[in-house]
Length: 509
Image (cartoon, rainbow, N blue to C red):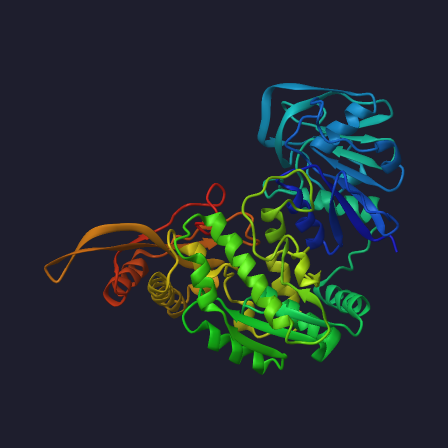
């Protein structure tokens, strides 16, 4: 059945937002790089072309065979995609006199056009481009303009709709309505993709893919690995072997708490302590990327040792989610930049001789939580803040050792416990503490101190791709600061991080 959407990624920072909006409309979509088309297009009933950091006027700008694709299914081309179609089909694209960026009002020329059905004239949209379409190709119909841009939206041929603005972003007030019109009224797609349908299809696919093979999965106590575990458990039962590695970089009491939690879920799980191995390898390493690489390597080596204790293991399952993939390599191998590497992204070394299975790799965090809710997973697990795979190592700026880990564990425990007691925890997407590689002078009991500084961080987000700092009450911060300084030996100063993402990442390393 042709009920899926194919999104071709030209490297835009907004491509993942297109996917989110499509899924919010209960239509399944897949993102593929422009230069790696799926071999079979039979399941796709609509095509969306993304924006791009490139200009279509550049010699090395991304290109696709439009002659083939434009005849396969209805097309929605956004920003770069609209400019590409214009240029390749005989129109003209030129550099704008001024950069067309920010809010604009849409003057709809064709009020009865199905794409803008139910959309108010002069609705606000969001522009983000430095090129503009000066001349439309033949067989085109102008659909909308703005005060500064003539060809904001047009239709090419019958079912190819092109937009200079971004309907997927929040600032395009009725962008979601425009997307829905394209998906349901132009492409005739059914809005049937729900958490329940994802569960059913994923379990079915896992059964077919894995068969009677054995799978090992690394559990962390977080939302992602927990949801992945339950999906796999429903698909293959006792053939799933869960392993929880204590890397020495977990939160206070987390190793025992998580093991107890999973045993109640009737998962087949074993806990193993490799903390000394991690500490030894991380000794005197302060570079954040080297830390991540070391943790990833030791993590894999640990799994290799444990997997060898289980006969005939064929698969390694991981709770990788979409933001992990985007930040590590590119959303799907396309032309976007690497932000940071993730320990669970990028494949396995040959010596492990295991195939990787990632049932959640195309889901955002909020989607994972909705799936988990449909699976009736404990709300304490689903509501748990994201915690980085490398653990406290990337919240310790500088050397990672037992003393620094102990110090940060105590700080983190006081902070998180305080958020829960103040009924703030569930209003925050992620919170944690960072141990800084600086000492400062303080006074305690009339004595001079020269001790560490910690930074507290709390952010609001939906998927981790963007985040804003949370305006915590001053009284709360005052109380937490006093408790940390009084109770954690080695800390005499507490600061609060008020940076947003971007430009700052949520974690400090």
